Structure formats: C-alpha cells, structure tokens
Amino acid sequence: MSVSPEPQSTPGVVELREDVPLKLYNTSPGLCAGGPRLIIGAFAALTIAITIALFTQIYYGDYQVVPHGSVSSSAAECSSIGTSIMRDGGGAIDAAIASSLCLAVVAPHRTSLDASGSLLFWEYRKSPTEQPTLIEWGGIQNTSLSPAPRLIVAMAALHKTYGVMPWSKLLKPAIDLASTGYNVSTGLSIAAASQAEPGYITGSIRKEPLLASYLQLLQHNTSTELCATWPCEVLAPTTRAAVLAGPWRVWTGSAGAMAATALAAALDPAPLTALDGFQRVVASLQAQATAAAGSWPSGVASGLAVIDPLDTYVALVTGLSVGFGSGNMTGDGWKQDTPPTPLDLAPAILVDEFVCGTRYVMGAESLSALAEGAGAALIEGPLNIVDAVESARVAVGAGGTLALEPDRLLPPAALATLLNGIPLNATLPLAALNLVQQRGDELLSHADSRGGGLASRF
Image 1 (cartoon, one colour):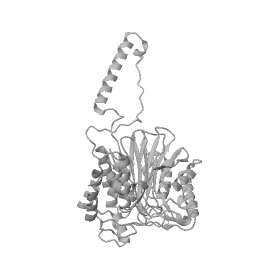
Image 2 (cartoon, rainbow, N blue to C red; image 1 turned 30 degrees about the vertical axis):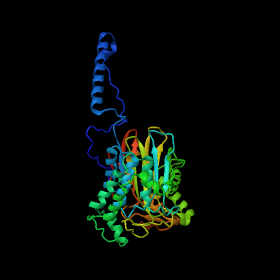
Image 3 (cartoon, one colour; image 1 turned 30 degrees about the horizontal axis):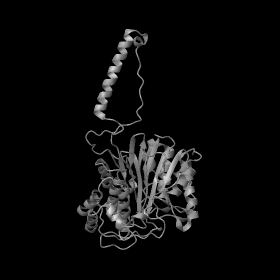
Image 4 (cartoon, one colour; image 1 turned 45 degrees about the vertical axis):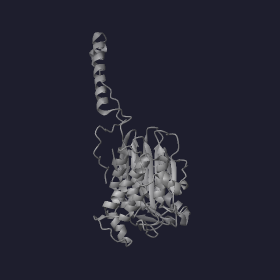
C-alpha cells in the first residue's frame, strides 16, 4: 500500500509547509555599484517582494492557522470519519472516538464495543515539554467496566474530559454504518471463517441492527450524564517517562514498553546497517519474551494514529483476547471479552531531539510490529517510511518463539539472524502499524496494508 491519496480539500484550505528553504537571489553588477541605480533597484525589488507577499497571503492565508490533520487506521471508512470530524471543528480526541467506534463496527475480528485499550494523548504544540498522557483500561487487570461495554465507557470518559464536539455526533457515524451496512473486508471474512462466525462473506454488505439501536440509545445522554452512572473514574490519566533510543524519545503504554526497550537496544549504539538494527530488535524481544514466560502480551488489536490542526497527538490501540471476543453475545449486539493474559496493545509517540524535527504517532497492533516497524523507520530515515512499514516482520511470541508472515519474505540475510529454532507461520490477522509522521508542519500518513486500511488527511 502506498501513501494515502489526498481527499477532496475544503475550499480555501491549503496545506503549507515550513520546510521550504529561503532562496538566494543573484544581484546584477550594476546594482552593486551604488548610486541612483542601486536605490531604484532596491525600491523595485522591495515593491515586487511586497506585492508577491500580499498576493501569497491573500491566496494561501497565514500558515499558522491553515488546518491540517490526519487519521491512519485499519479501515478506510474509519480514517475518513476521523478527518471529517476534524474538518467540522473536532479535535484529535473527537476524531479518535468516532474512528474507534467505527472500527468496533466494521472490524469485530480485531476490536469491539467491549475492547480493552491503551491511549497516548499529547497537546504537543501547547505543551511540548510535558509528558504525553497515558490512559489504559480493561485487560487482565480490569476485566469489566460493567454495566456498559468497556470501549463505550472509555470513550465517554475521554469525551467528558477532552471532547469538543457533541457526544451524539461522534456516535452517529458508527450508528449509520451499523444500520445501513458496511462492506465485509477480506481480512474480516478470513478471520470469521477460521472461528466459525457466520455471515461474513467478502464484499457483502453486513448490517448490525442491534448494535445500531444500542448506540442510538446512548445518543440521548451526554458523556457527562453517562459517566454519572458508569465507572468512568477508573480511567485515571498517568504519565510514563520516555525511553531514550539513540537520538529519539519514545513513549508507549504498558505492553509497548518492551518494544521501547528493543528500540533502545537497536539504536544505541547506532547500528551500522538496517540488518544490524533488525537483529538487535528481534534478539531483545526474544530475551524479554523468554523472561516474561506466561505473561507475554497476546490477543488481536486495531490501532489508529491521529494528528489534528492544533498538533494534538493521539495514538490509540484497542483489542480483544481473541477475534470477535471470548465471551457471550449480549442482547444489544456486542460480545463480551475476558482477557486471561495481558493484551498486546502498543500505541507510541516518537520524537527526535530537535524541537521542530520529525515526530511519529503510531497505532501498533502488537509490540513486535511497533519495535520492528519503528526500528526500520528510524534507521532508514523519514523519506523511506512506507517501505519501512510494509517490509517483512517476524512476530515474537511467548517464550521467544518466532512466527513468519505468510505473504512477506524476510531477506535471506535477515532470516539467517533468527535464533531459537525454526520459525512458525504467523496466524491471521497480521498486526498492522498505522502511523502519522510530522516534519515541521508537513504530514505524511500511512496505513499498513496488513490491516487493509487507508489513511486520510487534509
């Protein structure tokens, strides 16, 4: 998959860049000689410069207030919903809420209304020296946020604190998809067949009327009213210190901390080659997985990354212990999930040492995907981000076992570095790494083809 195409831009909205250098202009020898010709030439140049500046300002506007934003997720419709929310005046949290609820409808093999989650939130432009906020819910530590499903409780709590747009408006896109139907993806169809879940045929339109009715009921209350009866207080914001990985600062959630450790091993000292960095990442993950024994994270997940026009960053990954959830189907159309082990949810924010340097917001659907994909991106450089994300990876499982992706071949040199016996075949769905990259004021977004999604930006 390539970089996502630009959607139709809003009239008058133009994405500008801060990375265009000033150009030097040569002066003619006559103007260097002084006298009236120098004065006339200087005034002529000044007049031209002012005219160009005025026309540029009239046409483009002030670069500091030109909107720009992006959402990258494992479903094209969910990415588009997120950017539409931001175009209408919503912030990064609003976009993340609407997109994650969309994913709960169209990707039940990866997430659901009862999904656990890990979220990083950072108002970067407003507070660049502060730590990102980490909010996690569900998982093995907190298996229930009853009476409502966990994802819904978490989204209501986030909206109550950080939301801008009305709660009912953020629910509407998911309601529309559930009621009018959504296109069943190939990945969803394959996952459903492997778990004997009927009614998921590739390319067919599937409706979820019970889910739509349940979400419509939630539109009748504000998030504040819902949190008055739900246990929203369990979503206590925390901070986690950055891990230094070479010249990069890396923030992650609980599961992603092991990926950050692997990145630090790969980048310090600086690797001589990308192969060297890959070998260090895998070796570190294997060592940590062996030491963790039965507590190594697992499960399925759906990740998204968001940057809004105010340079607010949200990396959110929600997931389940198994595809479609491990519990019973409720009368409201959502299935319960009870994780027996920690879930493999790996959102991350990576920032280089320069104030206006390169920054990454990543929604990684496993810590292996985060460590290997981010490692390749940081080693190969920001101009090769798509190749870094799409290149073959290896999944590190409990006990340090390795699993190769069936549709991507590691280079022979990389395959030769793998330790710990013969690798297994990775099970579907493969973990995707969805990201948004920011360099100065320029955004590049990419949705990993493993997830079947498409990024959206404006």
